[in-house]
Image (cartoon, rainbow, N blue to C red):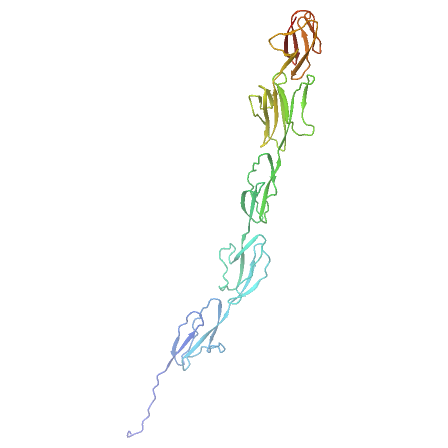
Length: 394
């Protein structure tokens, strides 16, 4: 104990304390360390995508807001409070159905309904009018935004088919678009008349069939027939084709064919199955060459019809007294009558003439009367042909 009274003075060192920040998924905030009682300022607010910062709280349940004044006498842990961002969304459906504006809250209902547009498939929402930046429902958008609908036109298959269903062309056509038909398909014996439907304003899958009209040819022929030596036009009155005619190697040896084409404007081409029997010109004229059979065919657009042409050998055959007239004389008896049996091909009027009526005469019906001994010749005529019958009367 000192020999006198003394006064002692206490010396104090101020304590320092730390405030730590739990940002609850926000950006990091650096802790604050300061002396007790020193003035405090709130740190820079943390950032969290899709949320707005509501302040610092002294409890985990975020019920007690914290005020920054001075450093308290103890360490402190503060907790960040957040509220999700809500955006006002309007819709540009680009021709789709109308959609009302709506509020979209981040993290709760970011998925937006899909619009509908006839003939198109929805490809998604975009945040730009050019539809290059997709809308992300997991991303926060602040304020009001307009979403733009993206569309892809629906495609349909258009098939053009032959009459038997064979596919001629298949094409993908966008909704309400037009397809391009192939060239008119050829079908032998038929004329293409068009397609069963058009490929315009396509709104569904289509099968379009080629349609045709059957080509037919009606044959008629004009030629001389051995009936009263007159020219006769032969054709079927019901409109069907003539199927067979007969010509001859003399006189009745030409015919003019005509082919009427039904169902096409194509010209007729002509041909003969045997040119050695008869030729046919490009205009349908038939000229006989020799006896035989040939078929004349008319063709147009793959359709054809033919007519049988029989060519008979022209001539006169005569039989007298049982003998066929030829180069030798036929012997007859004086004072008798003999009947000439004559066949003319082609048939026609037959006339008779005796070169020496003193030896024998011949009637218009071919009866020969012998008068006296001698020689004479009977001349038979028909269709420009002549046949001589040499006789000897004894």
